[in-house]
Image (cartoon, rainbow, N blue to C red):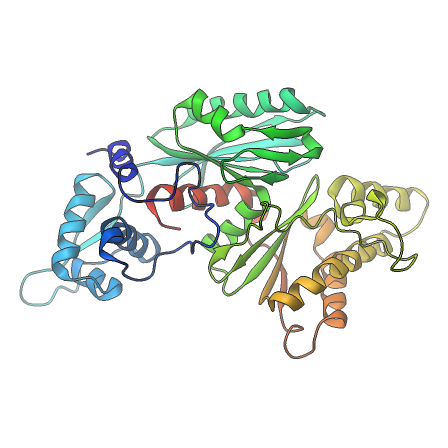
Length: 398
């Protein structure tokens, strides 16, 4: 059975409601244990696939030990997954002992590809065809050129069409990271920088392509990449700096969305309180005014044009970010804060000032030892996060 047939079978088994996919509030990304009988088969399939996806090259006996499932159950599930083209046999183990030789298994990593689209950058929409291990196989991009509203939507649709043509294997799904507030149905409720309000992006792309589509906030998608491919440990917050500023929170192995899907929207938090605690809310004094890429680049350019050094501008941006993050780090006792954005702007002075501010504004010995670092995923973090999102939604692995 081909992988698209396997997807149809999976769709008939108990799973989150359509459109929820990987973006299910409170749902841990990785299955780790057995569940109730009525949910067992779908869960146990994911458990086997998860073990092979992360570890690779395991025998049936290895899988039984790793998952806690019986050998009979493992044999049954592996046979089914092989028939569907999701798992392949690699041959006998090199160090085979006397008796029946162990046959090694792995996920069929060439069976499908995933399309990822990143709408978070301030000048271009970027997309890629990726394999299930997050490697970019083909890329494409379209200049944003100030497009807003339906014109911006049309550019997203055209970019997706281009990427579908570039795919060389069945497409498991399309993942899209969008700025702004995105609800569980993949509707962009608000993305002011793109002029979007209640845009049903997921539905429109699914209807156009006939493929499984998953749209989520870009920072939430980025934190999936840090979790899935950088093997980040513990509770963490990823701050995505681009056209605007947003963040993704991963707590107890699950994404945090908030009651109205606006968790992590720190860009509009007012940090310019120099006039005192009673100062009225002012959009020119929110975090994005100091940290969003266009604003920060403009401030740096103005300083250099006036013959002043750029360092004080960058230091203030890091300090303002620290003011916004300190209560969050303190409230959640996060183990990591990760920055994603242009390294030329953020690495160095900005992140140093952020680290110093958090140290000064959080409880020593309990919050001050949080790791503060740049992402290891570089510019492709949202594209690679789309892989995790699609895999989690379609196959239950990450």
